[in-house]
Length: 187
Length: 187
DNA sequence: ACCTGAACACCGTTCAAGT
DNA sequence: ACCTGAACACCGTTCAAGT
Image 1 (cartoon, protein in one colour):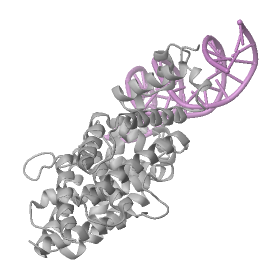
Image 2 (cartoon, protein in one colour):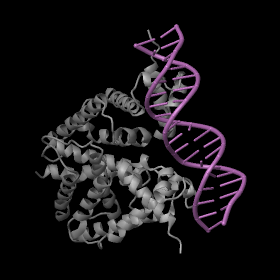
Image 3 (spheres, rainbow over the protein chains, first blue to last red):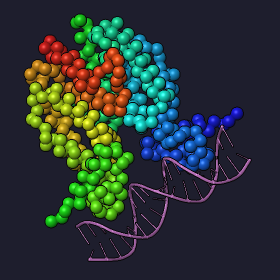
Image 4 (cartoon, rainbow over the protein chains, first blue to last red):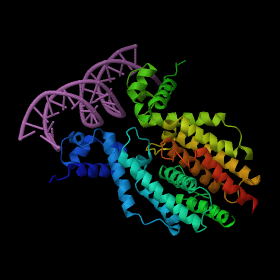
């Protein structure tokens, strides 16, 4: 059996991405760390961006594997987990949710599955009267957009980080849930 | 008087950024389009990133110059304008709000001024009972995070774009304002 | 004070071979 | 089927000169 050069390349890319951001991921260094020549990657991926897409898909799938089943109680945890992930792995986060010029079916599938799972969580929260009624897909987009924006701004240092009015991304998520909760009860 | 090589360099960089994204902005092409040698930029900026920071600051300042004074009625327009800007100039938007490793005082100042102006708008909307009471800085962070996240996800194609539940970033902003408005009246 | 041209150490990608 | 090594056309940055 093969020692799995493809996996070794992805491992090296993941390491480089985490350590130095996306610009530290060069095919030459990826090859070097995987113990192959500087263009062995081309035997496994058609381009650098395709390798990055495969990496993004793999990380998204791993995250999905560790996810607990959707439930109303897990709404807040899911959003907080999303933010912690973004702050812990900013380069990976920006890579996954950045603009792609190649479209990888695996990446598309993994992203779609993650979204669907979150919609299930929103639906459960609506049924438990923790969220107002209405289209769950649209409400999920609202919650996801807030978590995404707060995490993105915070990780780049663009969220007021000092003095009064300071709010962590987690605080903003909690604020939104609090605004939505009375709206749910009052329906 | 000088023909303004510095401005010509920034103009060229802005053109390249808009046309081909940040990776199309190479100092060599910037120099070429500005009619100078490939390293004349180094006489005006210490590094490529410093040139990009100057560009980001200039664009942010220009936007501020065209802004109308803060008022309660302009809250929705301001948020919609932010989203339209992000979708019209995605590369510029991602550049400005991305992570910087050099810190440019001009960029920092321009970003801080824009945030302060938005807080004024939020405050006016609170006084007009269009938004709930509470720390205006924190509420502004909530609104800004949502607009930012929705615009970022949409511009990268990560917002459910088809079928039911489809929501434009503008729709999500309106949804949030609607959820916040009754909360304001009921206080 | 501002600019040029050569040079250095990198890139992504392609291609002709090798096993 | 997978890998190597040389090559090509680029990069950002530095440096010695020129006016």
